[in-house]
Length: 475
Ligand code: GDG
Image (cartoon, rainbow, N blue to C red; front, side, top):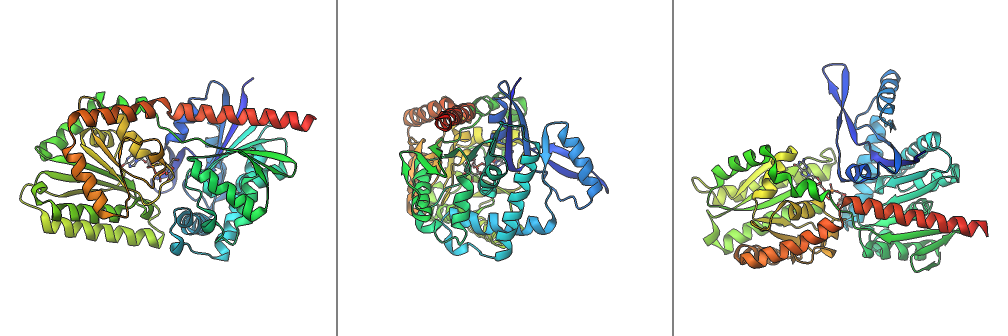
């Protein structure tokens, strides 16, 4: 019989959408995580616990949603509108997110946010405790659910608990600012194994544990309540083949031709992110403005293809960012446009996969300049999508976790607009041989350590930790 693996994440890999006036249906929203975990399907029977993407106030609807989802091993946790506001928009995205991305001054502290975060984490842990089979594996994901491992361990000590943090773990000097720092750390330490994207995040976590909880650690192991918690850095990868082979799809080629028709003779720069201040979109726009000012020879010859995917736009900071982006694009286009040439083409919506792939394939440069980013998968996807016969250049912020692996990108500090401008000029002038050499070196890394390898490594290391703990407790 297959071992059961329960994945607990804020969202299920499907989301409910309203259908007409009363009904609803489910759309799959497969991200990288779902793909990586699907590759483990031969070894485990997978179950997923998470929010179905919509609030269902009526008990009758909740019952129906549960019935329909459970047929696919998906287990919903329902949130009320007010929980969505205070837990998700509140503690998750107005307190933890800005703090972990070094936007200390933007973090909001409200008692109701924290109370709601605790309640929702409890609800996720209770649902997991209710359905998980004895002795099975529970893999909790990300900053929305940092208390779940601790609650679950208290309720169900028979379970094996893993945790992966997808965003940066900030330095102790920032983390200590959180009034609830002890609770969050103790929550995380309920896991047997905790993974981070980079070694730096891991170090920050270790020093927070040591200085906040005064626990000792040896190498990558912390001892708490007579139990060992192991930590490691495992940079998340992508489904390399999916992106590398995307250009063969007819739909992708058709979109490429369409875009090419209206941008002939122009070098294209890709800018693609969720709407988020951590992604450095405003700095990127300022840098592009400066680039056009300092290098008028490129006017009419270079365009930026800017895709911004709506996200958290009910949070005031995000709504304000959207307004500023719109304004700045308007100003740049107003100032530099010529008949037949637009400096920035702007799309504010998520593109279908094939259209995004057409942009990855067509753009000569990807400008990925977050001010902070746990990893940044767009950088890896762009590298995978390009090919040796048309080698693109990746300009990458040193503040993205991806910069640890992608050393052959043109690395810039996103706070220095001149570095971005120089990066653009360097990329535009780079000889084809050098572009190819850099691309192939990065493709080697991204294809070797892909999402399947990441998931498999996490599971392997976690099972070794479980085995060691078993032997320790048998002594
Ligand atoms: C968090 C961390 C970490 C983007 N535009 C479109 C679209 N996308 C897809 C990309 C990519 C994903 O969204 C974005 O992933 P990122 O990693 O860049 O950023 P976050 O959403 O902030 O993710 C991050 C990640 O978790 C994983 O651990 O890397 O640091 O913040 O896959 O392809 N997809 C479609 N249309 C778009 O217009 N279809």
